Length: 119
Image 1 (cartoon, one colour):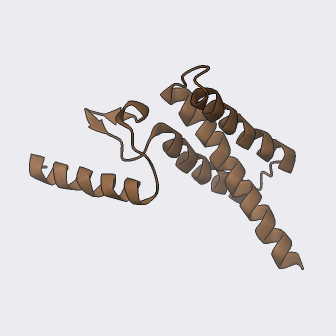
Image 2 (cartoon, one colour; image 1 turned 180 degrees about the horizontal axis):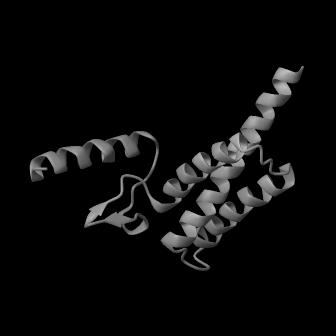
Image 3 (spheres, one colour; image 1 turned 135 degrees about the vertical axis):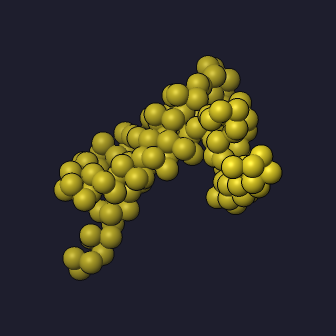
């Protein structure tokens, strides 16, 4: 693939990541072969977690609601500790907490859908 094509492809995905609401800070993003990933590590984790949440649902693995809220609180605490400048988070920790939150989002969303359609 030519370099100009790579740059256009990368720019397209960067614009897409921005439109999805990600801040795309370079220091909070993963890099692949020198190219910044289009979304930050936390958003990447959320996206991966949402995909895993769908897979878990298909496999009929249900997560209790209280665990979902614990997963969401873990991500919030990671963000809050960093926000208050108590301790800087790492990209790996952002990814892990984002993954947990993504799983929880799908789980809660699907439970709401099931409740609505059972009425």
